[in-house]
Length: 324
Image (cartoon, rainbow, N blue to C red):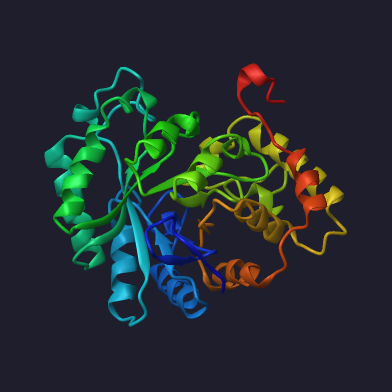
């Protein structure tokens, strides 16, 4: 395993992290025994960064992680996230930060995570999405600063809103966050324009989520693949989205056939190639995924020619950019 500095926190994290969403909910059936085996395998292979959230099964993901880490002696860096109170997702410009993230709620959420993880402090507590309307007065981050002083939170982070990831640029420049969690993959390359350079300039830890764009960049889906009703990918790939994504993935497969990388390896390598990136948290559900993700850390870096080739596959999915 290889390790990188997590911004200027003084902590080194594995370049391959563990995404814990599926351990809790929304990805179909997930036996707890598989989750436990996957976590232990990942840790044995050198992965020391685990990302989870309160919303992943109403704390289920956190609880499973807590049970596993209770029996491990190796120091593991854990990041979790606080979701907003009920309302639009992501928050609209008209949402009040103090209503969606009131102080009492934030404090109760932190205590819940501490209990679930069976820990005295949380390494990184993130606000689970954002709106740039809150940048002038980032109330939730002020409360997390207080919790940081109290020793319950080591570092503060924000997980980007999918549609406006650059909303966090001002927060990074003004010193509000120690870390950011972003979407950065072969299809979603916008963070390279501003967010990643600003993070690098300001010593911000960068957690990259969705390296596989919810699985499609692994090349394992067919155009007519069906997800179970309780799998959120049924909505993510609604309509003709899956067919379009599979077609684009096949073009990547064809153009990189002689690269020496499989599609999943290529996806993780691309998500982690930018020097600002600290760790890439592909979702891991079982031992096989833990092993294959961890193995990517030992592969050679992508060469500049291959990176330039992948730049051409950036996909502006929004309607006004003629997503098809």
